[in-house]
Length: 385
Ligand SMILES: Nc1ncnc2c1ncn2[C@@H]1O[C@H](COP(=O)(O)OP(=O)(O)O)[C@@H](O)[C@H]1O
Ligand SMILES: [Mg+2]
Image (cartoon, rainbow, N blue to C red; front, top):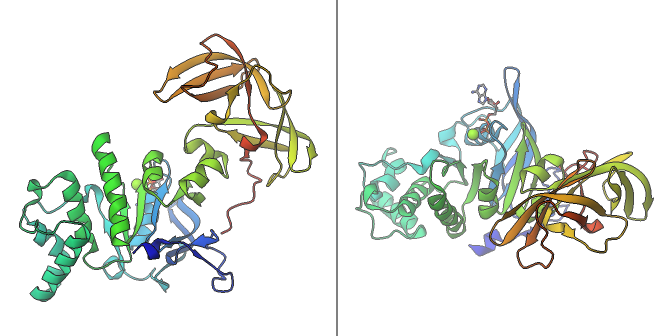
């Protein structure tokens, strides 16, 4: 099973289609090509191109109303796209109704039938199709083994822990060996502690069964905990798809930088360049940042709070004089909010053990490295799709 999850080097000859973004990707099982959906004058999903790999755990992440559920419902077949194409296992599916598609939409809360045993819950989709009893038994046993619930067949849902119930729901969804499970905020209603537990459980089930998971959430921490890859959506657009690390360290847009974690934005007019570096004039002094991907007379950079430090002997560039206006102890780190004279706000996050620990009201000098500045200007080359 692990083999299926291992990324494979794609040669451009074997995959000429322009819409598979990463160079390293598992075999695509779902392909969306320029998919759009409008409701009257509302453009809920705009020109989304995305491939999901076999066995991958992909999260679709974005704020409420950005089009996540619309996208998932088009994958499941409950909504027809207004434009574009969807392929599952290489086959166009737009005209295929939900029950004929090799996907399975797991509805909210992963609810089980409370009056049915574990066996009957898992068997449900086969029972209503009048599959012979012996084959049902075989299929149910195989699914229960995958989710580690052999011996629980005759229990009722109420006799199971929350985690076990979730595993039954997944076994039930897997009974038809779908190409992918589609999950729309299934943990939304749970309290934080249970949700954490369920996240780990779901990721384990993805690994154990080798089934592709497409998981919708508005919770960035949840997406980062569980996913191989995260597709960040904003107002119907796919802004960026990549690993949690990719998206955090190399956001391609202002929206992604701000939505994933916390960040500072520094921007100004380009006054000159020095090889791979740009000199940028900001109200608080000159900053020097990467030129790569930047076009036009001005640039905006994202700078993560943990990449800013308090310096006693700063260089003239990439530093700023500021005053600490707020500080909060967050256990393993301390979060400072600082303001410069021009009103530029900096959030600084220091490991608790770091030496310099100013207090609220202190005058400080902030400094950072060029390499920590990530351009998020719209002029950055768009995702290869
Ligand atoms: N059936 C519908 N009719 C009209 N508008 C809809 C319908 N479904 C979704 N929308 C609109 O499309 C946009 C995206 O909705 P949705 O996909 O549910 O967002 P999300 O799941 O990210 O919260 C929203 O503006 C929503 O109001
Ligand atoms: Mg939704």
